[in-house]
Image (tube, rainbow, N blue to C red; front, side, top):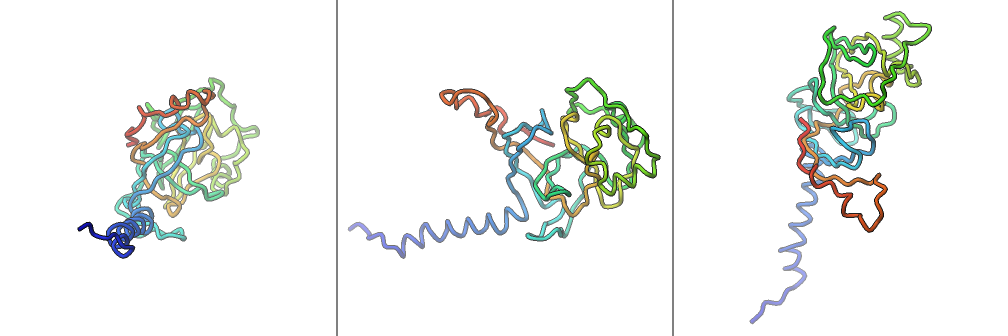
Length: 235
């Protein structure tokens, strides 16, 4: 005789395990272990494209306590070259950039060329699409003046720092972040140092990608799915 499928059995066999799985994802995995992020802009091209969805791990840099800017039990700190997810120090939205330097490091950009601690960086991932180099600020600031204005986030509208920046020293417990698309990235050159407590995780890989900016007709919608990007590593 076929067993009658009651609500109690439905709850026991399906609804309760599903609810438990959702709670584990929302209350444990998302806040503390893994989380998905969407990339809306092109500041990290061509490493990351607009419409890429990323998985970031959240425990290496410290377990973030939800609804606060506090993290505990950090295993390590962001290192130069790692792709990091963090809260914007200006408006709190999620951003994805590459860590360039950490507290105590000296950062300078001269005619688009990046130097860290006086050493030229040869970065395969960095691109420049604008051949024009914006001249230095006129009148120029002293190094102390530049450092102070940069730390106080007073260079937000100073376009000259895109191609000629610093030198500055990254403050303690802070990081210097830049987009790989150097000519089209609003990053630490403009908005200053990134405090550690705003870091949310390290980007690991692309798990989904859809070209939402494409001008292809709706009849070719399937061509917008960038399946070849799925699984692309970001470390």
